Image (cartoon, rainbow, N blue to C red):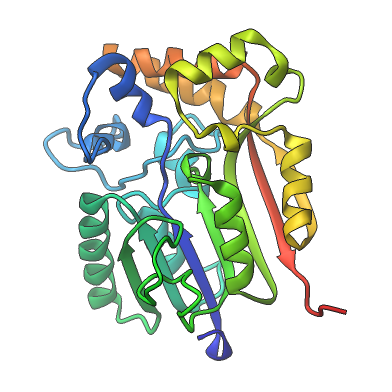
Length: 289
């Protein structure tokens, strides 16, 4: 599909919201996220009787803002907000093909409805394909955009606030590398750790109890860069933006009521255990020589 223009593949936001259920609600649902994130998107200036104007579901980038929706515009698929951003933002190149994947059925259905409504109103030319599936292709069928049997290729692949959940992240990065066009880019908003923290008992104990991510995904910033290079990515760049994510997101959550205060506290624990929020990207070489 990339011959006719720019194509993008966006994976769903996972977010630390799962911890709310693990720590304070103790729920064991197959669909733990639901739609409760909509309450976070309501602004003080909006009519409380009306639904929020946005449906962001991620931790956000809080530099120069104290607004949750504004902070989240850089990351997240969730119930479709970043898909709408990619379709509507005038400063971005128009996409010929946009693909999204989420493993959560309620998010998939809502994303489909919202994107279809937007395209009907604005009559956009972008082809949008949304999949209800795991981010990693685990079957031999061609229905998954990362399947070896799929003919899809992409200029850009984005994993936004979710790859730390994957089983495993390295497998996803390997599959993504195979599906990128030469010169194509993978970019992730993700969580890793400081190398010193991974050696401490506090970090090992906390991550073992809360189980935010598979153990194989618990790597240092340095090893994360090396991992991409080993797979074959070039021009790998990692930016640590922890200071503009965890503190402000935690403060915002603690202002939203008791349940959210618990989640904000857990985020503080992770930060104290050396968790780092990073933006990392790499390119597929234009030549194998």
